[in-house]
Amino acid sequence: MNISEAARRSGLSSKTIRYYEEIGLIAQATRGANGYRQYGQAAVEELQFLARARDVGFDLDECRQLLELHRDSARQSRHARSLVLEKSAQLQERIDSLQAMQQVLQDMASRCHGDEGPECAILDDLAGSREGAQ
Image (cartoon, rainbow, N blue to C red; front, side, top):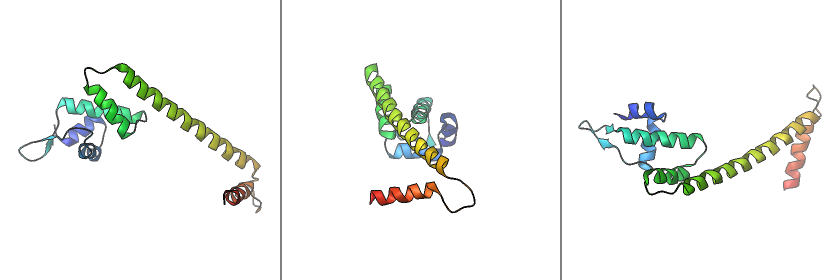
């Protein structure tokens, strides 16, 4: 199948597929007599694997590790589990950080009158934070 069909089936864009080939994440596609890339079912399955891994937050280096494990019939599942638990911990840290940021924004908004007057606790807070950081 051509790259457009592989993209449709995998849920990735043609540009992404070409990029994955360029960085060696997936094998170079074979070329047909017309010079166009040709993908088999196994290649599409790897692309689907990568799409799912990206959807749950794995970066390209992590995807490379997971794909290598997927390809290795002698793999040990503990390696995949370790990668997933590490990613989960990283995401939890990010969630905690985002929740803390959200709380600061909510606090700032609650202290701002939001009226026609010039007084604004939000701008005052941000100005004070900037001065404290310098």
